[in-house]
Image 1 (cartoon, rainbow, N blue to C red):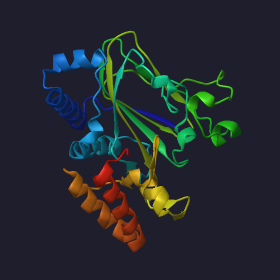
Image 2 (image 1 turned 90 degrees about the vertical axis):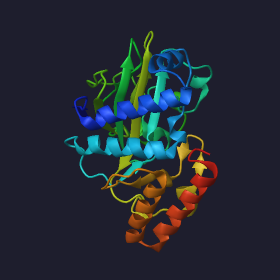
Image 3 (image 1 turned 120 degrees about the vertical axis):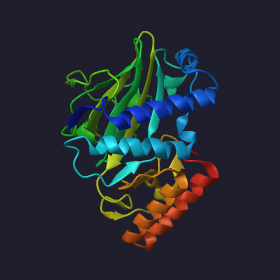
Image 4 (image 1 turned 120 degrees about the horizontal axis):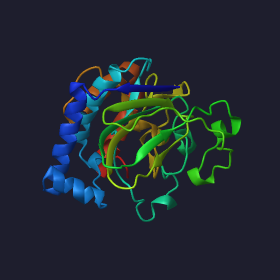
Length: 277
């Protein structure tokens, strides 16, 4: 499955651009031109550290998701969305990471749920910047479907992959199933800022039709977050992390007290140590 949509004309996309531009200028304490120059030269900023900010970005992104035809039913979304600042030069030591995106990979290989869908949005594409290359799904290839491990350790045959059309342009939005290979292609110069996120059908509190377990739901392993990173797809605009937590607990209550306990444990860990710790 692969979907493509041009959302560059939509108000919510413009809002995402302005929110990210303003946040980066505030963090780096400089003008946008100076911020772009610093980031192009290698400066990185993890926008996910400000959860209130990420809730605002998610609200605008959800508007674009709803405006994308063919996505089908979405029950839960990963939070926070990955906000990637990608330079043309590969950062030192990056390829040594187990799940470096410069390698051709399927997200399921790193433990993403088999029922998940990848969503991606180009926010800024400046100069001869890095791009995303996407291929047709390998879901019917048994080795590709069952492999789990470091991306560079995949030993299947990737020579016959079929590339799909994914234009490198601000506002373009793509969706593909978790068995579809993709990779980062580095440009010669320039800067790319993009958002990517996974979504799942149904409630985040059931895994393969069974109740999620506390350890796997609230825990965290580097590169492999627990199932609690998926939150219910909000049907209303949210403006802060506290408001998001309240909304999510009300959704969990509709599932049952056990779901509330799972979410409370996850929220407690996030507030104590952060999402990715």
